Amino acid sequence: MSIALSGDMDEVHYSGSNAGVLPTDTAKNTVYAFAKEHGIDSAEQFGMRLARHFVTSQPGLRRARVQVEEHAWERVETTGPTCHSFVRSGRETRVGRIGYDGERWEIVSGLQDLTVLNSTDSEFRGYVKDAYTTLEETSDRILATEISARWRYRWSRDGEPAPDWDRAYERARTNILRAFAGTYSRSLQQTLYAMGSHVIERSGGEGGEGGEVDEIRLSLPNKHHFLVDLTPFGLTNDHEVYLAADRPYGLIEATVLRAGAPARIPADLLRDR
Image (cartoon, rainbow, N blue to C red; front, side):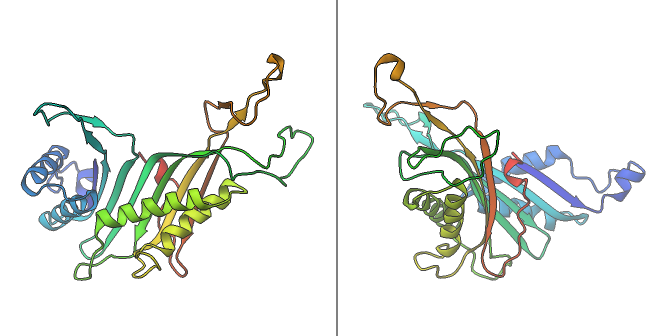
């Protein structure tokens, strides 16, 4: 978790007066205390509670930005009565970025490190070739990537019905995965657009009722898998043995917007970790 506070901070810079400065130690203690007193229903709800507290309790503060990372854990199954052991699950990391200026909210949720792979239904052909091109076209390849995504909710004001943050997160995650699995990919860019469109169009449930999400930004490193040449060993590799590259050879990033919505998610936010 990280907290950034801004407001009337002129004097601490000009004269060194700390009269308007809330110590970082206080912010840290507030997080601990709120977790104990209020619990954590969701990353978004907890971040909102903290942001509202900082902006409304300190007269010199005008804006709070709270960034939350949620790591999923699974209970270790045992044959005895023990139920206090957990193991970190293989899921992605859930993140949230909450902004509040005393009147309006800006809630950006997302995920990172969600690794996915399609073993077929992916090709790469028809690209530009010049004197330095050695890559051969393929009509059947492995498509693998590690998804990072951030999406911004339309909701921004108290008094209006807020999304159910946990359900909204799961819906976005499900739509990302459904689009990845259901798209015959001619390029990773095409797959990215399909994933973003699924989230925008179905953010209010099947059919898009409600339209909770106005914007989503995705970052997809292309994790190449190369078919291994087994002919020196007298063997035929019928798309069975691949070499997984130790680093991505390309990074595909883009923002998908609901029609008429502004782009507000910074291009580098997915690297702000």
